[in-house]
Length: 336
Image (tube, rainbow, N blue to C red; front, side):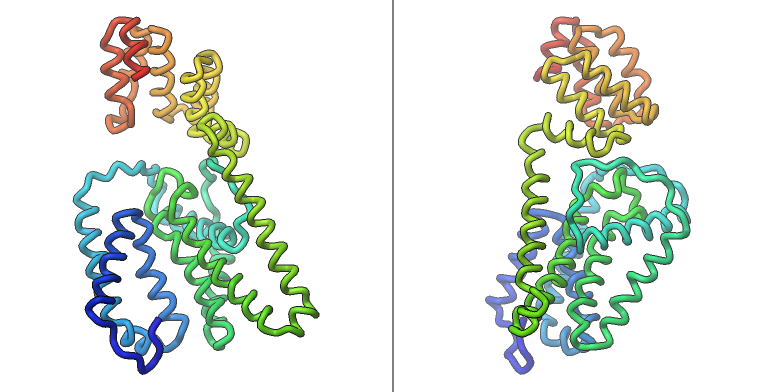
């Protein structure tokens, strides 16, 4: 960041920033959170206009680049699975719950799971803690010492909005934007550590360094444990059903893994479990089709395929192609 009185950025700096913005958006769409972060920082500093004026060239580049990217992205066919629309009120209440949970998770990211079951309908009771979370950064913004924490909480609230229930994601807690909220927790933690370590007396009296080490060690242990389940697909989906036994997606994923392992009986049991949780969950029906084809039962597979309505379901076309073959050929077809 440029200090007051510093010269405006030169052409080389602007070009470098433009390239960095293009690379970020091209690598991951979650880079769209950068404008939100800039807006949150400007709001929290209370000197919004001077903050913007000192960075106007960068902000213009950021806005133009984002608009160009969005114009391209909107033209690309959207294959992101969407959930059922329960109505605007229900979506708003679910968003309040989502914001509360994810903001708390940003400051205490110690609970992990590769999958979570779809939550029940949210009640109006979630509006109260949500209102409190919005009020806290507004109150903290009033004092200079509180503004870094206001920025942190505000960003933790804003960053996950792209995947909130208002956007109707199929799974509101399994999205890359949730990880960005943790940056808000990191801002608050870093500010607290900096202030604690900056005062030797406070460090001794309150054990600030010890507390910081404990928090970091806990976070590292949780991260190592969470990372371990990604060693293989089998580990991943077994952990998913262990931690989210009410998720049909988790049981469907485990069924797929067990079919590839040749455990067709277990794969059928997993599919049956998924459909018992949600009889309308078509990915589980499609996975069952693949189990039938693995046995060469093409007639049964064709009957199951005729009951699937979602024409955009991943793997549906391949299943139909394989089901049109003779049994032995169908078995070889799904192995490709």
